[in-house]
Image 1 (cartoon, one colour):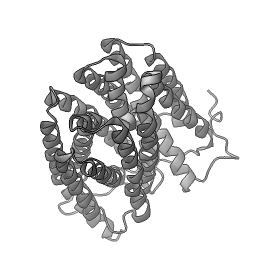
Image 2 (tube, rainbow, N blue to C red; image 1 turned 45 degrees about the vertical axis):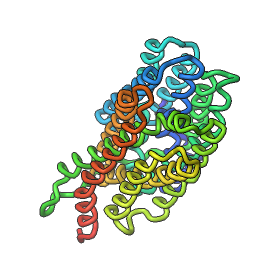
Image 3 (cartoon, one colour; image 1 turned 180 degrees about the horizontal axis):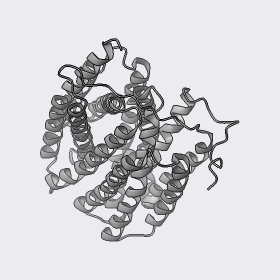
Image 4 (cartoon, helix red, strand yellow; image 1 turned 60 degrees about the vertical axis):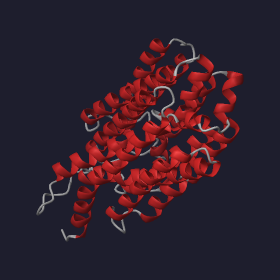
Length: 393
């Protein structure tokens, strides 16, 4: 492919501008947009195809474990490839695999196909994360990423579950294909981004290697805890006596109000450091998660899902931004993407095992504990990066 084929140099957006961050947010979302409508997908597989809770959870996990491996491959590739050419091919692959998913109705075959979809999508997301790290303002760029994901995820959760009874689970895959097609139209207008070479040095007790390990652990725990509960949140509402007519708008509203979390990251950046906002966000998420034990009350289910959405969209960009700060070339951001996908895949898998026959108490407790462990892992690297950023060069 001609190296200029996907670079319209006369018309591309400014590298440091908001449009570039928005286009990159679409690119880093297209491969895993199914995550943002995961409750609709899980519920659709159960209601339309007759899958069990465990089968639907395993298919979701297969998709996400594939994405984890794809993101891991991106770590080795991001500095060696022409990212726009690869992104174009990967987007086309995602379109084909989502279309093929419509015609598979056996759990094993669908799980295998979604695993392959995950490989392709995870590689694309890893590339997107790496390029975002090269913008020089990664925390805000990841804020845009969460803004796009929660905004369009809210639309999906509002309308898609209600369409499944009439159009089947196929409508969910068509929605994914539409998002991918829009991203393909944006790709030519993105500029190339130079690879930065600098990274924080070891100073005093701060060691980037140790900071990276703890940051990756925090990302894994944060995503696993949140997604483990989120994948079954529609079932939780039904189990507590709520109707789908209430649940779908409530979750959509939660996704849309969650935009406030990512918008706050975009507004604040790191001018107040990362430690305080990060810990506040994670601990509030843990408390709101535990309070979902009382989801039989409409205001509890709706209100605390909203609060979880806000703090999820607020804390995650800071965690990804920490990876980018440790290596602005983007390689470690791609590694952060791998740990994120591993967490997103492991959460529904473990939750499906704990859930059994509707044991939502165990799922909620496990999610809350996972978030507390995440906060413990994030404290030291966040403080270290805040201290390093205050020291003169």
